Image (cartoon, rainbow, N blue to C red; front, side, top):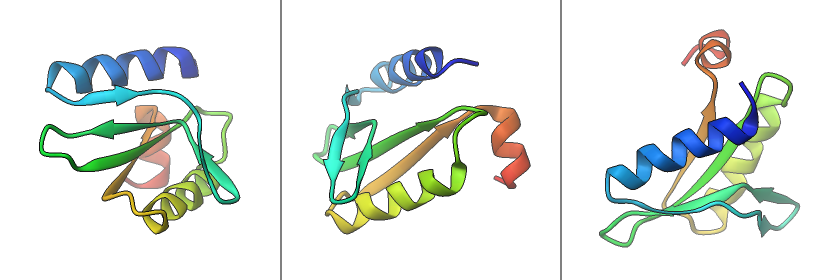
Length: 88
């Protein structure tokens, strides 16, 4: 699965559930996340996409950095097969 499709599918899903999704790189210290999601209540969520070729551990560090930069929550979006390997 390509990162482009993963981003499209995730954005479409979140928008149909009422979230505002912005997919652009956001610099947070030494890392950057792929985008952010705003809940209708104002909660800010960082989102990072990882495909089968990407480093999942680096993705977890990016999400930890996002939490440190005052995001309320963080999401790691990846393929089902990849998530199963990690143990989610």
